[in-house]
Amino acid sequence: MTFDEFVKQFSTEEQCREYLFQLKWPNGFECPKCKNKNYGIVGEKQYWCSSCKYKASVTAGTIFQDTRSPLRTWFVAIWWITTQKYGASAEGLQQVLGIGSYETAWTWLHKIRKAMVRADRTKLSGTVEVDETYIGGEEHSGSTGRGTGNKVLVAIAVELKEFGNEKKQGLRKIGRVRLSVISDASGDSLSPFVTENIEKGSEIITDGWSGYSFVKTLAMNIPFLSKVRKKRVKTHCLMFIWLFPC
Image (cartoon, rainbow, N blue to C red):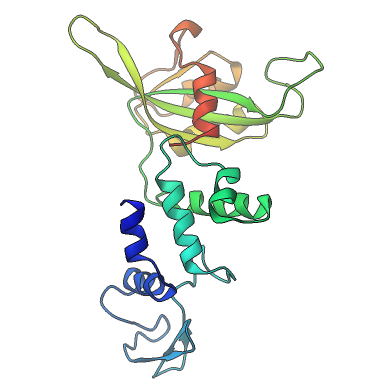
């Protein structure tokens, strides 16, 4: 959808609210409490059930619930975030919407990102590389490794898809990605991340860190593998995915 098309479809609050109405009740209004289909309108934001008197809203249970900002502003934010080729930032969103507070823009951005995650999404499968990396500012103490300073530790799982022709065998590209903040790089922290995000029977590639020793005992058909670093997905690429998700 181009911006001109977006403006035509969502130029008013009424159009935005009607769009949410159709999403919530595609077959017409139905009271969430008694399933009655007859209703009245209270003010501009609520639908009053004629049977049980329950007041329903198209924004209840959504990221728009209790917002004081116009729905159209939210829709503009969603359009902008989902059309950015190289990812969206809170600073960029703040400029687009003319929001005075960076914190507000940051909150909106993360609410929208969270809403974009499919609740029924499938786990990663096939060949999956798992790693961790620290996200944060520069360190000046000289410390390195898996205990670096006060940075945030993020676990990353990446599907590796093979491509190429007969002359170029073994080439791989990045597929789907899963990320999660973890407390440390121990097996107790990494095990839930792996089991919750990767299908059984997948080939798991790590760097051989002892925190991944649990993989050997998982009910997975293909044994644990450890690849040399020159064949692994570059850490800076994984950090780019984390900071600027597509």
